[in-house]
Image 1: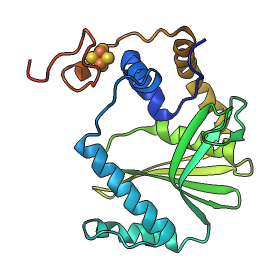
Image 2: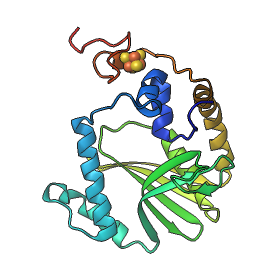
Image 3: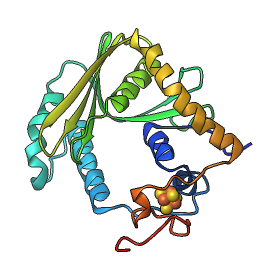
Image 4: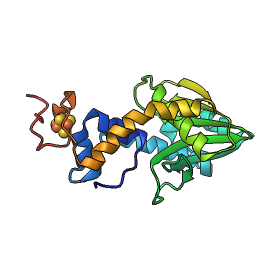
Length: 222
Ligand code: SF4
């Protein structure tokens, strides 16, 4: 039996990109990924927005363009939570993020709940790319965590361009979403059970991957 299995959207997509890289970074943890400049900037922006929306702390000057967005959360009539860490067990019931039975973890940048409606917002600091799957999973984890919620409106907020990608889901979509993820998560679960994490070479091998002793790794300029 391998390491106890719990997943997140980021872990799943990382595993699918290259199981071997995922193994070294997240299972054996014998390789560390140095945060890139873009990752550090993303973390800085997320932290500043978290403190602004939750604590009303003034945004740093170079992020003041996001004040109008934050004001919209100030004036909402719903209940606002930021950087909310959710955990769901294998029966799709709520548990805690670090609970012993946690099976899926998700972090919501902002969630606004009012009656049977939840609105989930995810800040994006990179280049805009469509990704309806992550929005679906935000909705599913929200339905599982808030049994009274019947509709979830999700949105990516692209902070650099002020673009928004939206998707709405009803309770009827919940089973469909879980079924879509099931075969993918099963494959990942099998890898944890068997300890088999094969290499999946891609453009990442050209100097971008931190697993330098992999036989597929080559320097950027080769
Ligand atoms: S070098 Fe390529 S194949 Fe090897 S672990 Fe990294 S991404 Fe996977």
